[in-house]
Image (cartoon, rainbow, N blue to C red; front, side, top):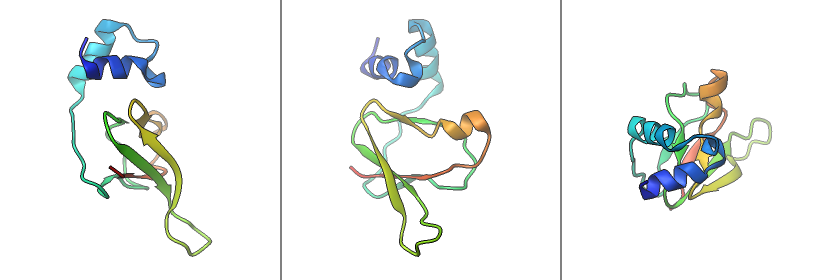
Length: 102
């Protein structure tokens, strides 16, 4: 299995999949690169994909609705972690913005 396949197989979301199923997920996916500070997904948009971090880090942020402050970081995703899957499952709009850190 490829390095990306091994990483995917070890992620919590895909632990129960066997090797052919992991390969199917890899075949359906694409590797994308984001520059530092780039918005990967935006809060309140329709979901069309989830993401596995292959390298670098991604900050997950939500709007500060009542405080008047800027976006609030609620998590940092790192290599091997999946984000963006919730909106694919529940069908609601994205609940947070994901931004490339490095």
